Length: 316
Image (cartoon, rainbow, N blue to C red; front, side, top):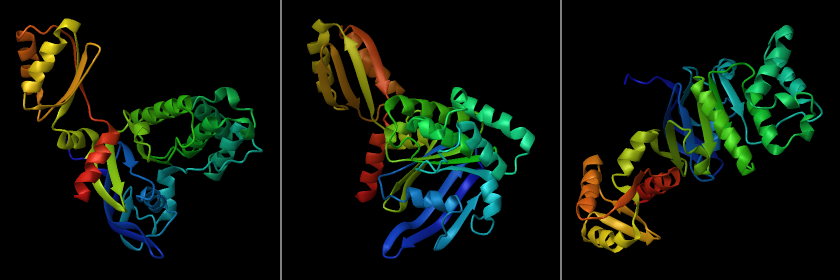
């Protein structure tokens, strides 16, 4: 794989609010064309980082670049590159959904004869084409979030920054929003998604930046971080009921196996340092001993477990 070019770079960035240190020497790199999850607990520094890259806040120390531009020295240039969706609606509720998007198209200098069709296309993209004539104040919270996302796309930015986009949404609206973010990634946009609810980002992020107490404690491609932290694998297997005791006994004898659970013909366990060869060897050993295995599944470590392992390592 060739060297990745960066859309966003932070180097030694510090930001303080009076006596509170919000960012403490942050170094961060977000690749072009990635969908990057900016994750961490409340107060980790995610929103401050987003405000800095979005030209809405000045730093105390360090450098920030967005698309090769400094947000403080060339705010108009950065704003042409970026579509920002804050963690609040910011909508004009007396307008219809279509008028709302046309208003922002005008503010971005879109030609009058293009505004209606642009608004229609964006409403179609976010699944609101049938609500174009409805007042914004009649839309559900999830619909308003999708409309806000459409607004951030009006000027066709290369970079989208979404701050806690799923906050307060019901499960169905969260799923719809995740699908939209994944589609934007497929369209070639660089997307930064901030969230403290890590399950929201599962399956859509190619990269991750983990923040804790104003510092970046891990960053990079999701697969690489998983591989570096999860040398052990969790395996679930289903087998014939009569073979459960035999399989359990064999697994308990293996020093690499831990966390063994047994329930209704299903066994789950972790295997330390289990590459493909080790997993295959273990399966062959069970089958060779007469265990009838009907299902064997290796599960990936989730984002929540990743975060806990990363922050545990930095605390030690």
